[in-house]
Length: 241
Image (tube, rainbow, N blue to C red; front, side, top):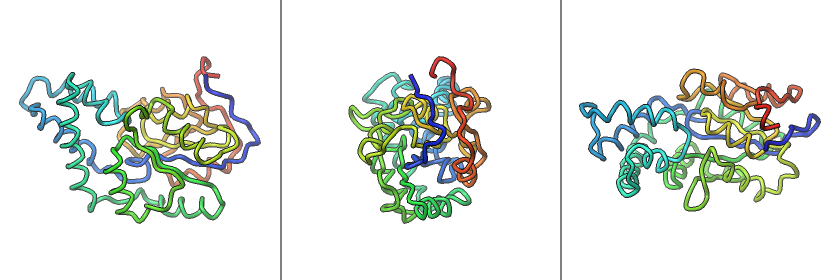
């Protein structure tokens, strides 16, 4: 059950998703999933192709391996396809660009002594390569990927691990921001004070609106306006309060 946000709690930590939230997607993730499907023998001519993409769209924001296990139904094939996914992302790193205003937002949060962290569905290898590309290797107080028993979104594991490791006083003093319903679900399950959906990613129409959240914004560049505004419970589900 998610906790009620504390109206007067100052935000100590902002936890960001990576692709689609801080970094422009520009089709990078879709191309990587296409490479993964092709590696598994599912091409655009295959009758399974359309259903595979429906599943990928529905599960967007979850760890790649989890998505591909659901698509392929075979953990071994899914793990091999994940390697093809990662290779595609790594080949695209040099062409990646930040969301407009993202570097400036990170800089101003640092000036305000607000800690920042990243949780992502990418593997640690891809996460490290992407952060290095932008000179963000040492920017965040914590950077986490799902691995082993550490579950990815929509489970709250990554968020709670960051909160515990950084010694945050209350989950009500944490803001999470992501571009998928899985990100918002994870934030709600963790009891984060602010659960912010951002429309700059690849979420299907209506997905963010139907997920539990306190705010929906167009871009991470709008984040500070949310942090500076009065606290609200937004559209958290009644059953989660």
